[in-house]
Amino acid sequence: MLFSRMTQERTVYPEEQESFLGPPSTTPAKLATRKALLVTLGVIVLIAAITAAITVPLFLLYGGTPDNRPSYTFDDMFNQKFSYKGFSARWISDEDYLYRDEDGAVLTKNVRTNMTTVLMDNTTFTEYDAFDYRVSPDMQYVLLSYNYRKVFRHSFTANCLIYDVQGSVVTAWIPYDDVQYAAWAPVGHKLVFVYKNNLYLKTDFSGNDSQPITTDGMEGVIFNGVPDWVYEEEVFSTDHTIWWSSDGNLLAFAKFNDTQVPIMSFSHYGETQYPRIMDIHYPKAGRTNPTVSLHMVDTTNPAFPTQEVPAPAGFSEIYLYIVSWASNSQLYTNWIPRPQNTSIVNICDVTQTPISCTMIDYQESTTGWIGVFGPSFPMFIEGGSKYLIIQPHEEGSGAGKFRHLCLRTITQGAEATREWLTTGQLKSPVS
Image (tube, rainbow, N blue to C red; front, side, top):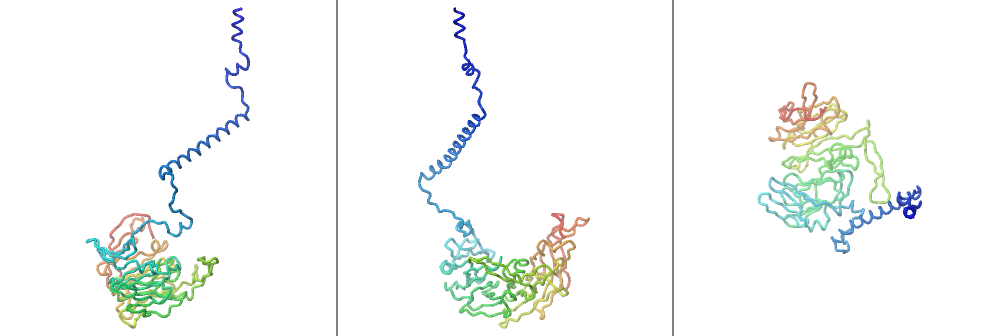
């Protein structure tokens, strides 16, 4: 009986056996349901964690108060509403520079004494919403530009006025809309400007009168002192082709004639709903290029006598690439024929009539264009008798040519001598 009773007590039924051995067999459908529930629960927990991570710090930071900071809109990406704070200094001597303070006034500062002087407050800037200023070298006048209107990549037009520093008043205007360029001479307060492709000179600021230097300018065809589209975009990368001698007496300027250049029409998308059709003289490969000539005018002579600076002879099409004053009597010019594999540098004596030029450098490339994006610019020293320039140097042993710093000395009636200041195989060979 005892054995029977013990056996009874140890009897295990099938359902109990399953509980001891583990869970009963589960179907695939039940497993899928459980996995879906676990994934859903995980996503809910993750979202709650992220929400807490964002809201809790914001609540601690702002104490639950509304965020009243200004919003950032799509238009703000382009209207410069939010921009970095910059500082633009314009050096006017070895120790002094011009700048605008936070209120918009124009001041000078001496870096040795740390003293500042107010030239012009912000009243006139604000009244005309001026976007740029240029102070005359003698510090007597300020040229203000306003009503900016973009033309191409570098060029624009504007209205201009002249502010009298001593009298603290606007003393004159350039009496034209759409002035293409305006700038002071290096000394005094001579002002040259371009309007409708003609050059003007202004020296009297008691009124709005100015004297024309050129009269043959024609919109879209003949350009004096400003480049056409080709030279603005592909050669000079600037909005003017005017070069003053350092004494402010002589003015060199380029003239471009697009008469024979084919016209291309394109749609210009401006501020209006519909584009307007623009025509520009645009030379494609093999078509006629604009013709260019270089001229020099003596601004000390009221008649403004103008002479042409001769270009190298023997080329049907040639580009003017670089113009620089070596001294107040010598003009440096760099010309390149249309294939752009040859460079001719002249030094021109502008005191002679007619102007005479001597070739001081000639380069020819057998592998491609001259230079990287054209010939290098010179830096004149010692009164213009010498200049520093980057040029290719033959390293020998078949290594090729490498760009190096060279000191050139101008000699009478001959090619400028070379003294290489650096040598070696510094980078990849050049042509």
